[in-house]
Amino acid sequence: MKDTFKHKGLRQQLVDGIESKGIKDKNVLKAIGKVPRHLFMDSGFLDHSYQDKAFPIAADQTISQPFTVAYQTELLQVKKGDKVLEIGTGSGYQAAILCELGAKVYSIERQLELFKRTSKFLPKLGYGVKKFIFGDGYKGLEEEAPFDSIVVTAGAPFVPKPLLSQLKIGGRLVIPVGDNVQTMTLLIRKDIKEFEKHEFDKFRFVPLLEDKN
Ligand code: SAH
Image 1 (tube, rainbow, N blue to C red):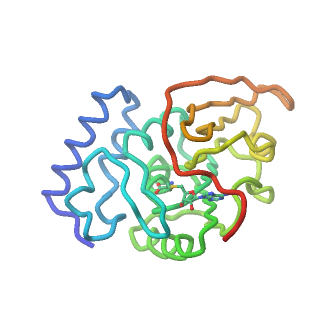
Image 2 (image 1 turned 120 degrees about the vertical axis):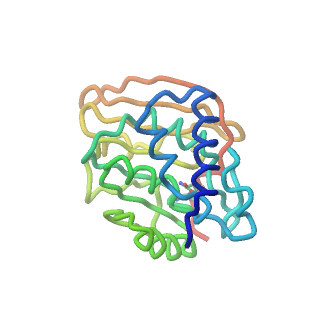
């Protein structure tokens, strides 16, 4: 598990590219510059790991495009010590970025293979995720609620109600909503029943699935 000068150089180019695409938050850019993305991908993809593209990982899933991770993370406005719930652990790349920002991260994955792999792998890299959960992200994580923010890293056909009810007042839910194409959506909890909705650019995510396989 090496992180060489070459990797660091490629990573800086990636950061510059993401910045030129419109990401402004310096802390988010710094986090992208720190996380060794090449270690999150199968070795066959090493040469591609610092291109701003999504790539296949195990179990027919993908590691999100770095720009997309930066985009969602910027919308979350993570502060040090925030309690953040991630839906869709996948490779663990987004979780690592959240850890770099000083968040207390809880992450749910519905595929056993990815859950097992990533919950072993991230601690090895020194990322202290608070809890990995093997389960259904549509339900959120009631026993650890409320959260400062929640990020959904798969395309959701609708906004699951439990995720809204597990936000703190002032908390933020960032979720790509739609079937084939998703609209990045930010919901801010203003009061017990009041949510402010903002819609942003279109993205394509793998689907947030309802049934376990
Ligand atoms: N955050 C990941 C992106 C992974 S892609 C990363 O940084 O690499 C989306 C992930 O969501 C996949 O791993 C998929 O298995 C998972 N997923 C899909 N439906 C889910 C559900 N209902 N609950 C939890 N995870 C789900």
